[in-house]
Length: 150
Image (cartoon, rainbow, N blue to C red; front, side, top):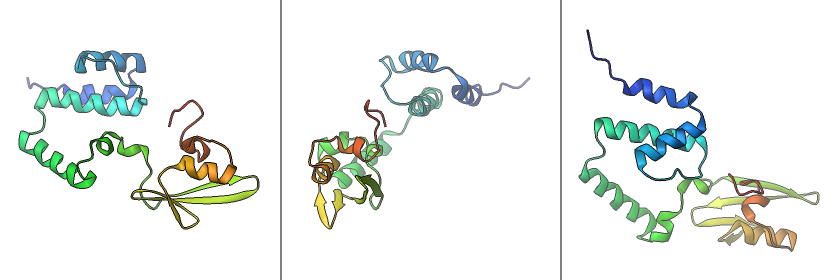
């Protein structure tokens, strides 16, 4: 009789596990409350954690190397480092928005956004320039719904 590795089956089961059970697994594996991110995020982090506990995590030298690379990318700015990379679309992405019959296109840049040849730090500033009123730029350009979820 061979001893089969139960980890692949446990990982596959995550796809069909109800969300409340995923959150309970999070509490057990991370000893903290689950974040308010979407189901896919919970599944991927739980899958990583299950494997990490079963097979071991990253080597300390790998963690150091990743941290050094992160500092090269963000210039050591701790605020930039804490912003989730997946919140902002990748540079070069075009964000179209029709407002009162006129189409506006904003381009995502490495350090912000560009509209009509001008750089902007935030989508909210562009939305305000277009509408003349205060808007959440992420909502205005359809990157978040009105309740703040992506």
